[in-house]
Image (cartoon, rainbow, N blue to C red; front, side, top):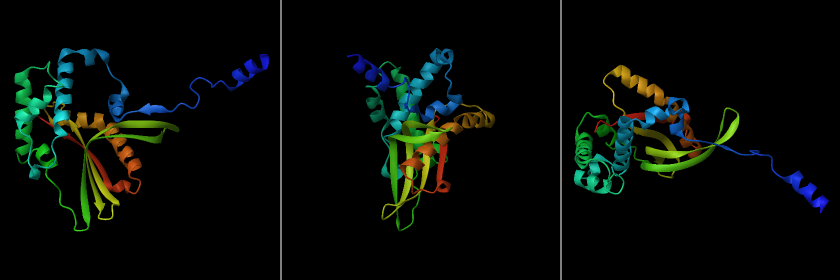
Length: 219
């Protein structure tokens, strides 16, 4: 009996030994620090709910050339996830989002315009695609997981990935180019994490052929 107790103690795993850290791209913004006071402020809670709702709608958008969702359909889809929001505001956001997508010259319209590809290439569109990859960060292994808002992946007709564009939608408000630049700087580590994830998912891609950018949605 004593032998069994000694054996059990000898093989019991050391706490945290061999555990792999977990990270998300969104955790890289603001240095990974969340200010609880700011997060719980009513205006910030409202902005987050608006952002979450618009993100859920944007996954319904493929290409402008293929037709856009109707604002009424977006409002109806919101009932399941935003029934506590002001209905007039939800209708306004849906209407503004569709109009923004239709309006030439907006960032959203450009994003939803199908890019040309060569005769021997195919275009693959990912929307709200979840991922989980194992990577090495600062000398240790970690699981990086999250969702791509939108990825344009160009392949050869044989399926080999050639180039890719990662789009991350943001609903942050800004009133000057200086404010916009500050927001872009804050999210730069997040974009880098998305880029790392895609390169691990598609190792045949050349890093020089992968771009990652923010698209600000005004709706």
